[in-house]
Length: 249
Image (cartoon, rainbow, N blue to C red; front, side, top):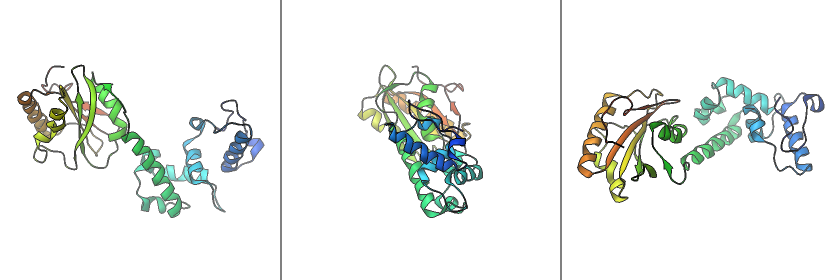
């Protein structure tokens, strides 16, 4: 059980609080508040317990932690639950429209937080630097997005621009759009990043063709195209690492 003493606040055991996990959660929160602890360490809670706090209360036949555990199991874990539609969530026994809306809102807040991150400037010296920044944002998108990381002379990212949403292929993407913000911002170079909703980051022939056209256009515009990183669900591929010719860093 993860309900343990945290930040100097009170600790609770199962024997102290009985069998209902939500009652233990609620009692823990009340005792922590009485002791002057604003909120227990959320990182110490199991995923089902966190969802239980979002839902707030159970029903006559089940507590919210059990319901959350069942929902997680039914959807293959947290990522599957986050990808479920409201209708799919509502079909889960005990969830219903209100709890479905609460989950959708919680996951949407998480997505918006990721969309706002990274803030400020960061170095893009290697493909891994880019992937670590964007894998969580882009790895589970349901449709393709093409983004451009704009770089200064020291390979510091000065901006991240979403150029296309939908079908990303050489036949659809206007190459000039890739460089519009780079030229306006007087960027020294750029890195292309796009996702594969299938989860497999292996480059397609269209990906290679788009990359070749972008590299050629970059030479004409004096904006170095340094890499094209393709994002999958939990992995990425750098076309530079695959041997595709790019401008020198």
